Image 1 (cartoon, one colour):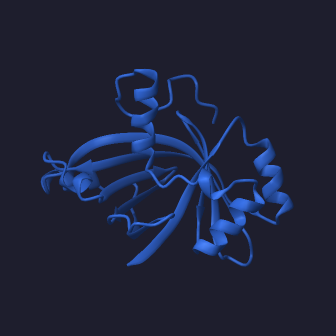
Image 2 (image 1 turned 90 degrees about the vertical axis):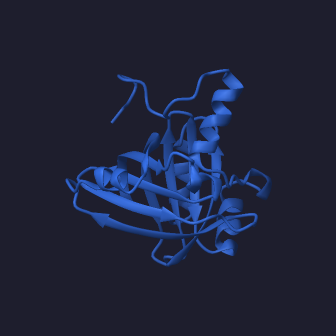
Length: 190
């Protein structure tokens, strides 16, 4: 089981400046911009959430990823065990999870572009979400700190919360009743 170490960084406005900085620092696109549809599953008692765990089904183009993430370790970074594997796109994974006592509890969408370098120390994920734009930096802590600094961010900018948590905060600030974090129909630029 691998341990994923990451942070999020909020990007105000568009990604033009960030993309320019990434190219200047030698980062190149590894995976082109793709639409992701994510569904989190939990049981009726929300046991996974209460223990900081999650089961996620992610659909991207003709691929489906099943992911388990364990609880986060206390840290300046989000560190958690992760098991992830691809399953056939048409596999009936949701009915299997339902039969095991898990139901869909939260859906969220985003567009993601993945950047990296030949050194392969870490990767940068450029996420466009219904609640704003974010970068995710995944890699060793020293690499994360150095890369964030090179992009003009400080440690005080680090976000270790999930998109679900960020969405609930977004709804509270705007006094919106939370549902799923989905793009409005017709607003998506693919």
